[in-house]
Length: 480
Image 1 (cartoon, rainbow, N blue to C red):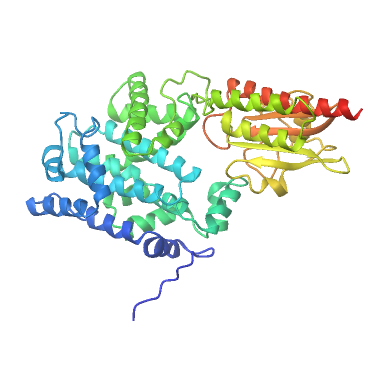
Image 2 (tube, rainbow, N blue to C red):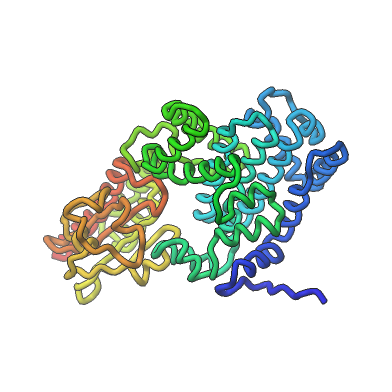
């Protein structure tokens, strides 16, 4: 008798429970199609026909494969391709199979729930895939496509989970802002993403190289070692190309590839540019902003990236604020507009406004925007009598761009326990004053994105804080 599969996500289940749930409830079609494509090998002409048949069964997949077949990344000859069979003949079985696998995964994930965690993981996986394919010394097309797919699917457990619209994803999103990510995974879902990935690699027949890359042991081949290095490089580069871990990986790769560190550093940055182009080719331009800047000349750990903000929207919202301040301003509307402007127009990922409570001893959350901030409403509280980092920033009397919390006078101050980024990564603080008394505070950051708020964003943030302060001043004068 066939075993009945629960349609409900596991509650603190094992990795096997999650593999079964993802495979049979959330993504059965993807799982089956991946198994079908992955098991095909270029052994004879009939297999080529089988690959074409699998692709042609899906009109969207056919369209995507043909589009990719005409990109420089796959088609260096730039010979026009208009049929799947022509693509397999001209570009090669392995390249087309890699396109099909990659397209299926990306489309299946993005069509479900494109939350920030999913986009960030996709960007990292695609970046690593492009790095591995480019850096592989072998001229074998089969090997190049194999390492590309292995890197892309190396976080399939994490990708599949974040694509689910389930309460556990919302809860884990909240917990990962408070504690170590792996510990949060075990607490909320009962298993780590790594263990779920290992289970899916086997259940979905993703290939021996994928299994080797995601295994807990040492790399058993040069190909799996390269993919692992590429994954580490992709993650570390999010903190900037001068990050110490980037330098360590480049040094290891330079030795194995017999290249100079300087030449290899240039190559990996060029590969990052190509990863952005590949992302657009695969129909996910939204992840390009999450890839490291190719021309990073900043200090260590400070990955530079063009602001996510919209200067025209900033001007429009500031104009609206000026109009609101003409007569008797609606304080609530002004503050709501300022928070929205900071988030949407400046591009700051997380923004909160805290105001004094009735007793005057604490600043408590009044308005908040940004993914992963739901818990702030109940937990973001500043005790004004304490000597912790948040209280000191609130009482500093000026706008602050806290770029290095490890420097004095912040170094020895207690960090908040409700969020693992605040007070540990770059944050912006903008106090609101009535006379000499702090009555409110704006706080903003970019969560765990590698790009910290830059100087331009801080200046725009300060401008918005100034508008809120003008509103307070007007109300104080009219009531006085």
